[in-house]
Length: 310
Image (cartoon, rainbow, N blue to C red; front, side, top):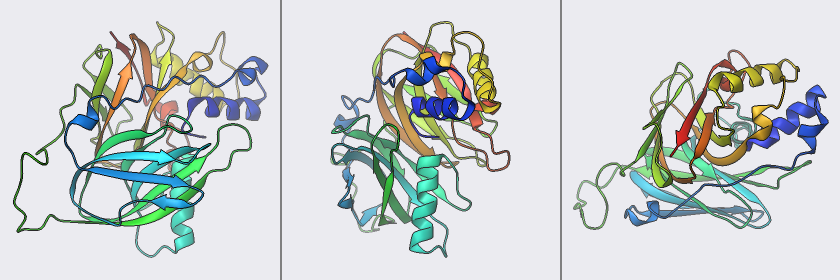
């Protein structure tokens, strides 16, 4: 299981043996990441770079909202999340568990995930806003190549986030106060639902507020463009068919979908903001995160929402 939708399809086809047509398709990717608005809002900037030489990131920051930009060495694709591991783990255990969350969508007990992103392609960057609270984090960044036999390498860098100094004088002209303006809200809930508003979503560059309002589950966002007329139940049924090793009847919606955007794993109570430039069409947001209690992806149990862009 991977962050890009087509990798899930390829893995499922290989495991179940159904459908040579799906497995023969090339990945369908049309990234909608944008930075037309988000880079003009005035939030302090943080750059994170990852590659075979390791991860470069700040070691200390004051609490607040930051514009984070991820870059990755070519020819790789990069991933980033701000994670808080539980106490008592060794360095190897910390890396192993962070990678399991990033690569395999397996939430780790006792971990807190503040959120992140991946780069849309080799040599490209991705930006998002995150509200970092005081605490000790690991900047968890990885790099990998797409396709069969890929290997993901995850690097960690400690980050201490401290409360702002009491003597600091606010400077409203230098740093924005409060949340960034968002035209779209995507809410992640404990009852395994995404709530997207407004409906329809306006086309073009828009700031999305992505917030996990629950307390029980961590979620991420995989966004795909789907054929017009697609329903939520169709996608859920296909997930359950694939989980059972049974090919869906007719042309599978998932095999016709196009990956457009992503927001990384975030725990309950955390919020990130991202900018997506979507064309008029029908889209779905899907959660591939595995529920530790059931061993099933959240999507199979209903965490799918279909919405339109106009």
